[in-house]
Image (cartoon, rainbow, N blue to C red):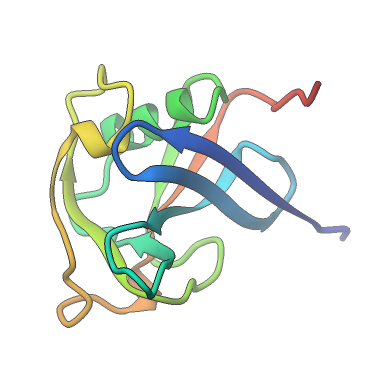
Amino acid sequence: MIFAAYLVVSSSPSAGLIRLAVNGSTQCSGRVEIYNSYSYPYYSWGTVCDYDWDLKDAEVVCREQSCGIALEALGSAYFGQGTGTFLHSNVDCSGSETSIDNCRYSSYISYSCHHGRDAGVVCSGKKTFL
């Protein structure tokens, strides 16, 4: 079995950056990570806790990543455990938002979640790089 590692990053209107960090088979699937630009001088990538994580939430991430529609919303660190702070938990998207930051969520919940609960997505598309 061959695994490739990809890191796909796109801008998010309010937080700055969101990425799919994976050791998987496509550029449009992976662990959802958000850049923490609010903790100067400790900027870092953080993860999303899978509490209440569902297909509507994954749909927003796939759209934000230009990766088509969401096929799966995965939890339990399906794509491996991340590091850093949990920046979003209990994400509640309608599915029509342009960014995960436009959804309702709890933030900075590092004490009530652990990296065995990192959220991930599988999207239908494939990134094209110009």
